Length: 430
Image (tube, rainbow, N blue to C red; front, side, top):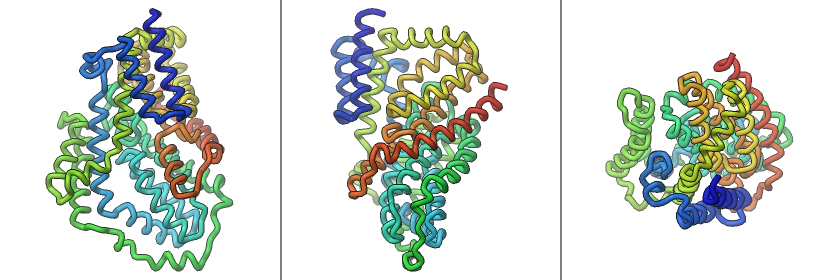
C-alpha cells in the first residue's frame, strides 16, 4: 500500500478507537476523522459529497431523517404510553408476562421504526410501569434493548446497519422480510425463554401494586386522537410503499421524506416541533463515517482487504458465509455495529461478486446483517440502542453498568447466533 493508504488506515483506526472507548463523543470522533481524511487528500469534496461509491450515502441519511420526523409526530399522540399501560394491564401485574409483552411490543415496533427511536419511546414508560409495580427496572430495559436489536433485524428500516446493507447491496424492503423475518420470529421465541431464565430473580409479584395498575385507564394517555389517526394513516402508506418498491420504483429514502412532508403539511404539527425530535447527532455521525470509509476506498485499502478475503476463502461460499456471520458477531460485540457495517459493506460487495454475483451469493449480505445486528447485543457498546438505554437509565438514577448489560448480552448473543447458523446452512448452503 502507498504511504497515503497507510496514513488513512491510521486515521480510521484512531477514530474507531475513540468511538469504541467513548473517550470523546462519537460524533466528534467521526467528524474529526472525516476532516483529517479530507485534509491529507485521502479523499476530496467531489468524492465525499457526490460519488455514489465513495461518498456520503444520502439514501441512508434521508431515510433516517424521514422516519425520525414521522416518529416525532407520532410521539406527540401518546400512543406509545397507551401501549405500555395496555401491556401492564393485560399482564395483570405479573412481572414475567409484562416483560414478554413489552419486548414483543418493542421488537414489533423496531421492525417498523428504527430501534433507537423505539427504545427512546418505550424506556420512559417502562420506568413508570416498573415504579408502580415496585420492580427493578434494569432487567426490563436490558431486555427491551436486546429485543429491539433482534426485532430490527427483520426489516430494512429496523436497524441502521440494515439500511447501509440495503443501499450497498441493492436490496429491497421485501428482501429483508423474506430472508430474515422468519428467522427473527424463531429468535424472539428463544429470547423470551432466555429472559425467563436470565432475569428470574427480578420477577417479584406484588398483588396490591398489581391491583393499583389495573385502575389506570390507558385511553387517557392518548393526547390527540385526530393526530394519532393521521399519523397512523401516513405510517401505513409509507410501509405499503416500502413493500411495493418493485412496482412503484421509489427508493425508501424518497418514500420516507414524502411521508414526513405530507404528515407535517397535513397536520397542525409545526415544522419546529417535527424537526425537534430528529436525532441530528446520529445523522451527522453517519456523514462522518461515510466520508472516512470512502477515503479507504479511494486509497485502495478496501480493495486490498477485499482481495485478501477472496483469496483466503478461495471462493468457498459456505465457509465465507459462516465465517462472515461469526466474525461479524465478534467484532460487533466490541465496536458499534454501525461503523462496522459501513466499513464491511464494500468488502462484502466484492465478495458477492467474487462468488458469482447472483442471487445465491446474496447470502453473504444476510450473514453480515445477522452477525452485526445480533452481535450488537453482546456488550453495552455493541449497538446504538444499547448506548441509548444505558444513557436513559443513568439520567433516571438507575445506572446500568457495562458488565451488568454484558453478562446477559453475551449469553443472548451466543444462543441466537447459534440458532441462526443452522438456519443459514439449511436454507442457503446445503
